[in-house]
Image 1 (tube, rainbow, N blue to C red):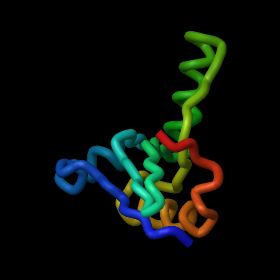
Image 2: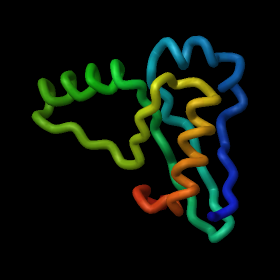
Image 3: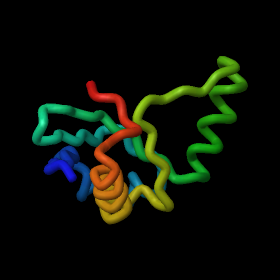
Length: 96
């Protein structure tokens, strides 16, 4: 298991209720002790399905690297998801 740091912007906690209500957050970064860095986007299932439908209607395609779906876009869910990704060696993510 790699040592990592989850970096959330300073405004995250102050805007936590709004972020959770939106169901989407795209300003998370994970740095790993081996030099890898991942920019992550978190969605809840409802917001993701809306986003997919909108993009398919507009462009006929939905694609987003390092997308992580969590039950709710809250600090605890994000931290738990990143810990699980770390346990898997961040194998499913693309380093930036």
